[in-house]
Amino acid sequence: METKFSRWMRQVRDTRDEEIDCSACLDQISQYVDLELTRGEAAQVMPLVSHHLTQCAVCREEYGVLRELAQLEMNGAMPTEEELLDQLQRPPESTQ
Ligand SMILES: [Zn+2]
Image (cartoon, rainbow, N blue to C red; front, side, top):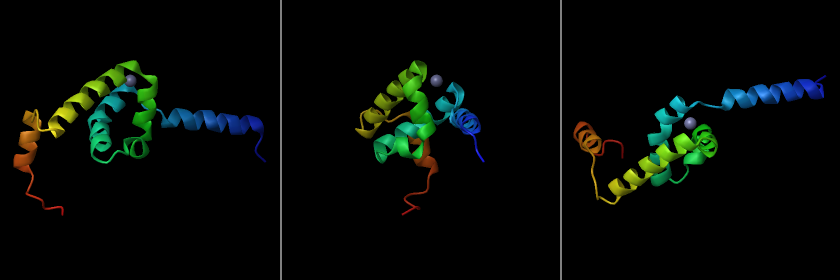
C-alpha cells in the first residue's frame, strides 16, 4: 500500500527526472523554435524545453533571439549560411 509520503517522494523524483538543465535546453532550442514556427505545437512535442523556458530567463532570452531570426528566415528576409548549406546537402523533396 502506498503511503502519502511515498507518493510524495515519487512525485518529487519524477519532477526532477523531467527537468533539463540549460545546456540541454540550449541544445534543443533551435528545434523547438522550428517546431513552433512550422507546426505551432512545440510545447506539446518538447514539454521539457517549454517548461525550462518558463523558469529560466537566460534560455528564454536565447529563445527570443532565435525565434526572431527564424521568423526573418521564414519571411525570406535573411537566409543564413546554415540554411543555404542545408538546402545544398538535402536531396530535393525526397520526403514527400
Ligand atoms: Zn536555462
